[in-house]
Length: 345
Image (cartoon, rainbow, N blue to C red):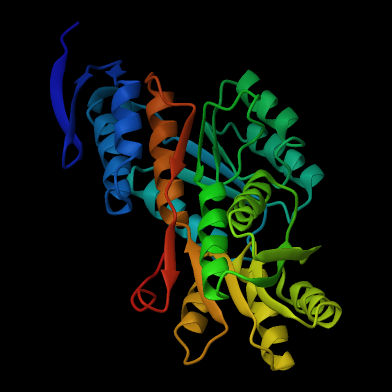
């Protein structure tokens, strides 16, 4: 069997030889790990490079049916996941794959059923954004038994489960970054609160990171933690209650931008000087941060489009025989008034 070496640049300073043949691609785990640590501007190149390596298998690709990709989202009533879905569709289309997408509406039973239905449709790759990191494990196990490549995106589908890889933000860092900023923005002293969310790993990690940052600020006191369910209306009501219960409140950390917009409405209505930090980098949050005298002062931005592009590239590589890393943590970026202009997912 003749192998033709193809050089593929995964970053400005990371180049690997990928041996291709009619039936095989050999990639290294080290190269994938190096590529995953490059700046975000290059993550699209990572996907493109992996996809390019697949296109080298001209003979079988020309004869085989297009790959079928299934992705189950915890919700699609959120600009973050809508952005991710759009990027998935574009990336899959560029390689001739078809896509099946489902919305669990934060219902793990529905999500498990959605995955089972996708398996009946003979998907080749499953990208899973779990609404319950543990509850989805049975569906992941079924997918693996069916020979499907499984990559978790944004939230892991049980760290001890049979997923092939996980691509997601450094959520601990996101919470820590936001609450470091919070402590500094209130002068290192005063009462603060956390607007929590659904108990999935990314949210839990953001809260853990926030608390770690606050622990380093002895003058800052965490006086309340309540669940805003990451929804504007619920967060509005919960924040109103927190402000009423704690008249000396100086700052709030919200676990996501959707909830933060409800919190911002409550803060503005109160007339109090309460600083608001969040996580996501959503367009609405970026716009709010740029307004004069805004109480919304920082969000730790994620990169949803990059996450799903990397996840799909990793899934393709695994499908065609590569050894892939079990986890690819993705950096977050601090966005405040100084750099919000021009930022977008």
